Length: 176
Image (cartoon, rainbow, N blue to C red):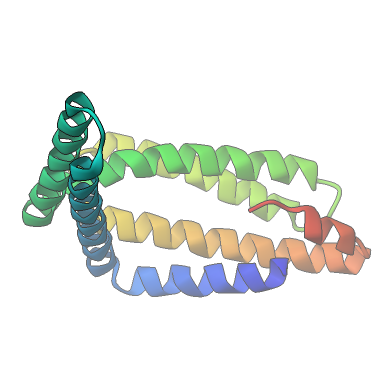
């Protein structure tokens, strides 16, 4: 299973790297769409809420969320800056997870690739931080693509090492 996940992540990473700006832009539009739909659902839900205070708060929150979605749809740079900030948080958590698991599997050959992938994730945070909020959609596509590619390769190599060591039980315990 670990090998399959590694191959899938590697392929997705390559696809993202082939057209990073288009992928980054598509992600921003998708987030905008989700926000609009969520806001509209919240507004509709407010009509069914009991009590006038609940209706008012629910309607207000729904309108804000839908409004932010529309704003992001028509101003993708704003959404891109917001997603870049979220991406920095993701890369910190993801990088620390990879470093922790690399140390956990250090007795197996191939663990260093997971370690390198974790360090690269933390370097991505540094790069994004220095360019934020100007990094934009291309950075989302490139950095997520590189992260998926490196993570996929690391998981493939780790799966091969674990298989050679006869530790198939570890393959089932890795949490992704």
